[in-house]
Length: 129
Image (cartoon, rainbow, N blue to C red; front, side):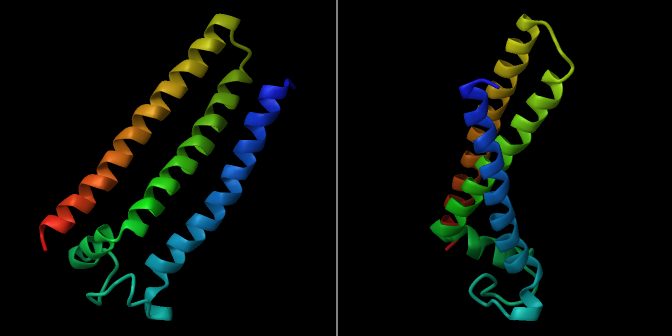
């Protein structure tokens, strides 16, 4: 394993560990609300997916940053894993480069779109005030 592959694999493992923490926070805040009464995440009461609560969370910059971090780590972890699965099929060197570059481009596009969506949701929520 080359030094670059070791570094990428290390980031893959770290992204997985960070995802466990972020997913745990998400599950705690969104799905255990009734058990722990987290009014700060659901200020309007009711379900976390009620529009009033979604809009209230979208207004908070911390939630937007959380969503963007969650998206980034999930995309890296998932797409790097997909890349490794595809490269285990032993494609030609040219095809391996095509796969790597294609996944990188797809990841950047998906991250840009997801980031835009999170920021647009915040702008929409703030405009509704």
